[in-house]
Image 1 (spheres, helix red, strand yellow):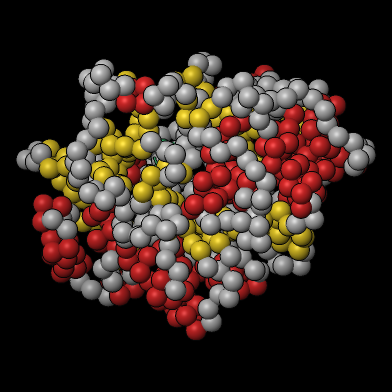
Image 2: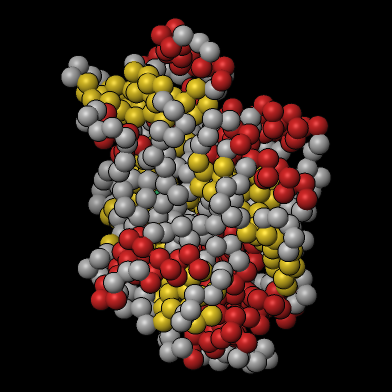
Length: 585
Ligand code: ATP
Ligand code: MG
């Protein structure tokens, strides 16, 4: 395995570059080993791509960027579906010090215009669909100087990536300015669960923070094949067996978690080019067809995989190579972990992190899983629960999930964002300075607040309560929506559920559950079922947490982010203003 810097703290002036320090090193040491197994959705075209391939292609693409007049510090918008050129170009851009801004390939012209303008991108690389969307936006609204198409039927007049690359001899090497670990490398967009997506800046050292993601959480090493579905969204349909999983996004930071986790550890990525819908059955077939050892998916996807019919099939014909499954992005309930384990023998390991951070805590190798808990802090991550003045909370007390940003000698932790890019060009990070305990400069006294609430138990395990804005305050009781959701999700009548606070004159707020029913639930009388669900919650959770209001809704009701997360803020808005017909942020 390539030896990567393993310090958790940043030495700002140290040179560091993922293309040079990781990809080229693998190419030197084990060049022919697999970096990616790629297939189209019909499995007619399958490509096995080595580290040597990506090293060479990224030298060429870095040279190409220079020849196109793109310089270190310029920004590149990357809106490609799941094709290998995404990784060729992204690695080449890092090599050249060009800041990569990946966006969902399903972005509309309006989304693209906003992102191009705010990120101040100089070059746009897309496919037939995204380039066409880009060409519709008005010229004066952005500074993009170059538009390149890297996939799909060529659009007349648009420069084609493959043609441009063909002019650069394969043996040429890029020799350019060396990047420092503190130089900006990425601009990511958050999922947009609580409002418009925020633009998160990460530096070159960010990729190092995913050594832990790969080693400790995903158990990756040479020979492993990792399929990351976590950046993909989901849309609901009446039958869980035909539920479509929308692919082709690659805009979420989770795409880079996977990339860095796999390549930092010498493992390989499995990449499947999806077109439009993708069903849970396709997913199961793919796991049978390819030697995929490791799977990451959002809880929404696992929820759909654990339909009784599909599980029966999986149990009858087990996956021969798959042996490790993880989930991230939302709270993962015990019912799903149990069903998946019963069918596959594999325990899903939850992990917690944000676009702004690497994996912060999780169920890592060697730790016993406490179902429903997010696990223990990742190696080297000073994760804690702090109150609103920055003091660490006692065991089992709710507080802000926070990360200490500095070591006691003032070194900055790697992997946590440098800040958000604002439309006015400024950067802001949600920092809390600990003023109350000057004698113990706990990690320099500065916490990065995740915006999430949780608590830590007596064994040091972290439990997620909810996003600070989602926590319900009912008659002085604070209730995290995910716990109530997890209980309801276990009931056989419930297929999907979202819990929010609903205004109440008497209690301030009451717990309200929006519930999508299973076919079994649909057969029951609604009035009786509401009572049953409430009683079930009173029994399984603390009685004050039961939903006083329950509304049955259809499969398409929930407003979701492109990565499949339910936007509870939109549901809250609907509760405040019931005249609004459909929930939207
Ligand atoms: P936005 O910041 O735009 O509102 P977002 O917070 O959903 O969107 P991401 O950075 O993709 O954008 O998601 C990180 C958030 O997802 C975390 O802050 C947390 O709320 C939630 N999350 C991630 N992993 C888990 C997990 N394992 N359990 C519970 N919640 C999780
Ligand atoms: Mg967020």
